[in-house]
Image (cartoon, rainbow, N blue to C red; front, side, top):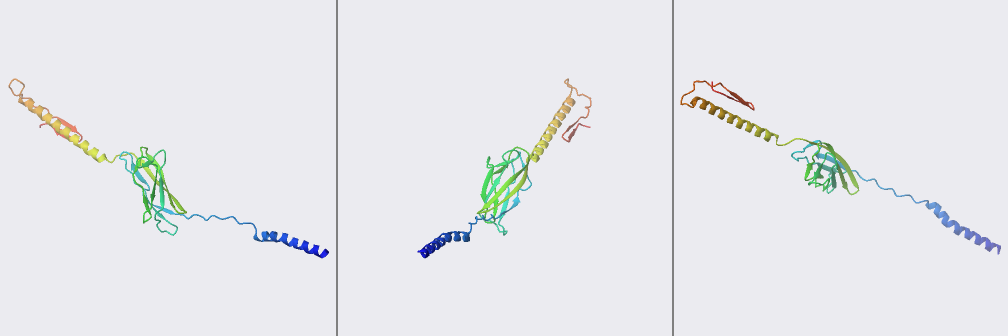
Amino acid sequence: MYLRQMLACALAAVLIAGPLGAQQVSGPKQPLVNQPKGTLTINILEGEGAKNVIQSRSATAPVVEVKDASGKPVVGAEVVFQLPTVGPSGSFNGWLKTQTVRTDEQGKATVGGYAPNTEPGRFNIKVTATSGTQTGTAVISQANVAGSGSSAATAKSSNKWKWIIAVGAAGALAGGIVAARSGNGNGTTSATTPTPVSIAVGGVTVGGPR
């Protein structure tokens, strides 16, 4: 009887210690570690340091090239161009502040419908590229400046009017001289010699008779 009790106690101790021992051996579960994302390289091909003319609404559209960690072009990467919402800036297609495009077979991406706004000054365009779990960012610096692309045409028009005024003045002067020489209204010719007159218009000088 005593022997049976001892065997039962020993068996119970083994059954209880079994799960606990297994738990101690396995230990606590280790937390999962997130794999770091890869980094894309964005090379600025066009648009860095560009000066956009406000009056003519002309701007240099940014062009970038996206490459992976091994230096190979990334095809089909999503590239977002973001303009400032206030101050010197611009717009895409008339009013948009962001534009998303995909890189081509050479890893290049460019925007369309880009124009400056009416505020002069410097600003930055933020560029973000994404391909799977890989990302990359870059900043393109530009400036809006006051000016007009038609300055040469304006100067040409101004010179044209100067010549017209000069020719008109010369014609009027010649007519006055002829009238003075034709007589004094009584059928007699005036013997008075007209005084030479010079008219200067925009660098063009018309002289009277000598």
